Length: 494
Image (cartoon, rainbow, N blue to C red; front, top):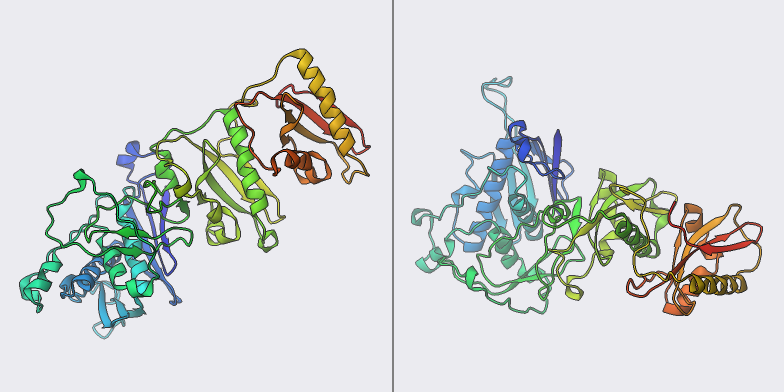
């Protein structure tokens, strides 16, 4: 099976393609198989028309050079690993304080087809500014944090030897190697002058995080996030313990603020650590909550030329905790959808780490109509969740009251040519508490019914989620093109 991994930042994208090792397939997670055999690696850099491409040798050299250069950049001590032309395909050179040259030498084998001694291929050279370099380093960090991609490949940074250094002993002590994750801090520390400083709150120390590392502490710096909606995270040490984030595009999930607990960024990784909601009744209720979030937030519907499809993760309270583009087009045009802005804010909600997650298929159609459905469908016919009013006399009285209220608010000439069917719930006083379109036509023409205004009159909004603890009576309401209205007790979904 061909597998693709993508690690994307605003100025850099790493794209890896490969295969699974069949001998280890039995250990794979069903949703996210392990990429253990690298076939092709591509590095896309902002401002460069062509990507840097190569095989495993190229990719390993790239990550070694980038990480070594970040170490050198932080310590101000030369590191041969960053620019070893004799043994590495990739090297990095400092041009000036804000310009860095990435050089990729030819991968051509001297004994291959181009063994002609007169054949020479000029190395590729790309100049990066510090922000672009940071994004490249962050993409490499994301790869190393991904335990399902080339897990046997690890980065071993070596201390810079005294022979390689011309710095003073005080500077040399800064060159103790950091674990993976230090690359981002390294470049962020030097790019600090380019980034607005947020209000920082020192993290609370934890006894188990004490380290015997000789690396000196650094002042808190804000690491810019690849997602515009993410919040800068203060870093209090030059050797932080890395968090497996696996934010490879097209996967996205909420990023914690400094005051919120850390959350897993990868939707698939999250689903591997928490239960999945599969109960049809819960899925039906969350399906509506998700639709009610997406539909009013999608304001630029005319910009789509083709359908965009996403897999979306939703917590039990309806919060969108992550999404994944199903195809490349959806990944490229995700900003044309409301999904990035609808990810829950961890500062206003507790962590979702241990909560069950439901998965949905969300389609932003080129016709401007969003479609939401459970990712795996319904295992059986769902039912309405929450407490119910079942007393026959009370149900009969509420049935008549609902008919009278709807009839009084529905007038004029209908603009639809087929029946519109809805499930409508009322409380013990007969006030509408919830309504749900039962067909796509009912979704499209719901504004021609009085239901949205009736719900808004009670709650101030027509997209509120019902209170599951309040007993409700449920009815099927049918609006006919002839103007006929029908209200009958709810018999269940069909």
